[in-house]
Amino acid sequence: MNPPPAASPNDPDGTQRKRPRNLAQGLVQELRQQIATGTLQLGDKLPTESSIMAQQSVSRTVVREALQRLQAAGLVETRHGVGTFVIAKPSEGKPLPDVVVDSVQDAVAILELRLSLEIETAGLAAERRTEAQLQAIREALKTLQDCEARDDQAAANADLQFHLRIAEATGNHYFIDIMNHLKDSLVPRKRIQSERVNHEHEEVVAAIARQDSYAARAAMRLHLTNSRERFLTLNNDNRGA
Image (cartoon, rainbow, N blue to C red; front, top):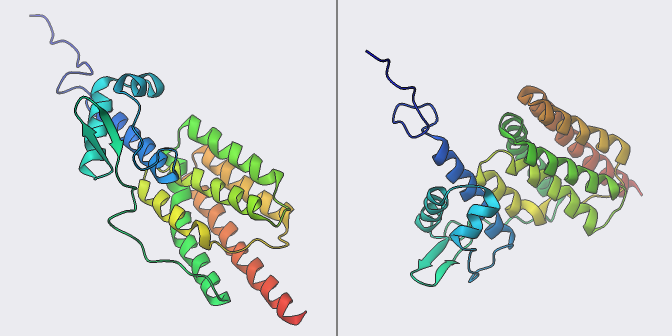
């Protein structure tokens, strides 16, 4: 008797059975991010299934499953014979409370929140990041370093984008949603020690590149703890001026 054939990707017992679902989840995260950041605006029509297939290198089955998930989440609707349109942003329907930073205590509280959030974000990014996501993190770091010493909105935006790219590498859209919610409330950047901060950022990226989740968490903890201390020092210096 001939041995049974080896399990194939379409075999119910095959080890690759979950691959289409993983691809669909990745596509969901990509489209959610485009909606959250405004790349896809409310009312915009999504690309056709064929276009998404070509852009993302996935099958029609994956595209349809991802669109179904987005519809179930209330983010898009499909109009038969017309296309699929954005009808809501990820944060709509479950709004987070406004974050207002109008005191030193508020700023320190935000940094403490970021400590609890971004330490885990860095660890998960190290475990899950793709090569494309690692490249995006590195490019964001380069942009940040180019304007690190500047005290303006461009530097603040570059800092935010660096941390967002790390959040994206977790594959968990809730990290991205919370970071986007905090983006206008991050601690102001004033006269920071750019060389030291650059080194801290590089340590985070190096750990993520090695896929060393322990080191990534430790590097992010050190960076944010030092950020809190730098902010408090600058605030005390300004009071004494």
